[in-house]
Length: 113
Image (cartoon, rainbow, N blue to C red; front, side, top):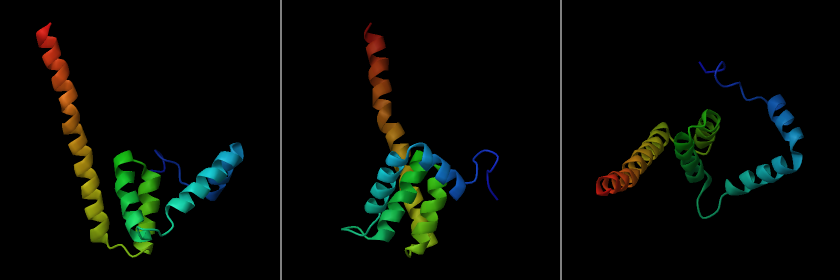
């Protein structure tokens, strides 16, 4: 089950090729990513649940797959993951509604002209 025709499978070979094209940037990003997901004030499970939610808002299929897998590895339940996804969905919908204020402002400005 997958969208390999739409999204190529993420492989180590492709990751290595991308890294070779910009090794300094790749190393910096990899270190940053590793550091961000280390336990701190937030535990690793919580960070992975946040990542699952954000991945759904950014609509990155690779991130959805990897962070869902890591969330489970860090002890998240299916219910916790789904709840995080619902939070993401509400935030995305809420942002669309909030940004309607901009459209309302433009509509009222057009009426004044």
